[in-house]
Amino acid sequence: MILTVFGATGQVGKRVVNQALALGLTVRAFGRNVSSLIDRDLHTPNLTAIHGYVLDEAEVKAAVAGADAVISVLGGAFDGKDQTRSLGMKHIVQGMEQTGVKRIAALGGMGILNANEHQLIIEQTDYPEIYRPVGKEHLKAFQYLAGSTLDWTFVCAPDILDSEGNRQYITAANYPPAPNHYQIPAGDLAHCLLTCILQHHYVRERVGISRL
Image 1: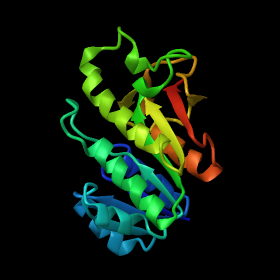
Image 2: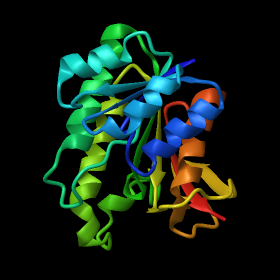
Image 3: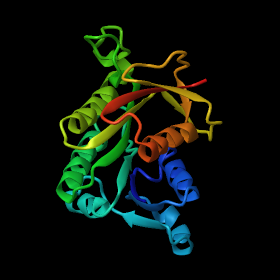
């Protein structure tokens, strides 16, 4: 399997890359700061480090062309002024549709899960204002996916811990899981994203996730 990873050098992205390589996948790691992967790229035939900008439509399209699947773990500023998450997802969706690549698992925030039958968590009046700007960026990214023809999965993470985790976590479709500890190790999040791709889980669904 050829897997293109956007946001490959972040705390989740680098773990997606490492776990995918350990599984024998061919990985295209895309980003502006992939110099840390270059030496490894020269010695690992299954890894290609692609220096590119996710807001450049042509570069994104070239990175997804011929891939079997895509994982997006794009980051950005917490204040919502950086539109890397939303516009990056727009370009990824466009590139995938133009090149015929169908499967994507992407990372978002917990606010995009359902609070009830009528509201998302981010739409509730008691949603913390500090999270609202970045939450709106996650919502825009999700809307690009939901309006596409792709086989998407949107993993909606709580607070992400910079650790490998122990693969002891719980997931749920479209709602937060129970129990919910509002935390997930980055390594377990990477494992979930890869599992969704490889086992074709949660197609066209959002995923709530929590450590146990």
